[in-house]
Amino acid sequence: MGTDQTFGLAQIGQIAILVQDLERALAYYRDKLGIRFLFRVSTLAFFDCGGVRLMLSLPERGQASGGNSIIYFTVDDIDAAYQELLARGVPFDDRPHIIANMGTYDLWMAFFRDSERNLLGIMSEVQHV
Image (cartoon, rainbow, N blue to C red):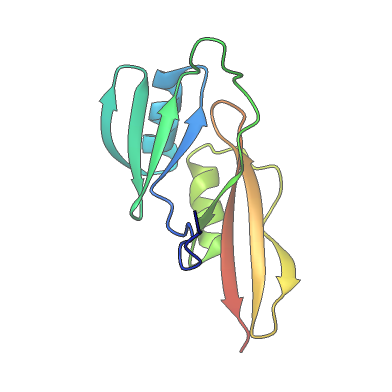
């Protein structure tokens, strides 16, 4: 049996984040972060992140509740996004700061916590002028 060398995973369809309190997390992602809420089914809540679905889920029986990956949200103006999220009560771990000079642009990031203390980030590619 051969392998298909042209096959490769590329597009993410959905990302899951485990939460302890679904109502609290749903309100946080919808109201504080302003992510478009799609629907809720039982112990799951779904949002649209620019075509990638974000699923908030209570842990299944026996499933660990921590250890989520970090989700980085791309923003055009990191300072404006930072100020808006602060105004909505989003707790940041740090201020926007440069991560790397990429030649034609600088990569900026800032990190914050959701209602469940999961680490999230905003990022922006600031073009050199």
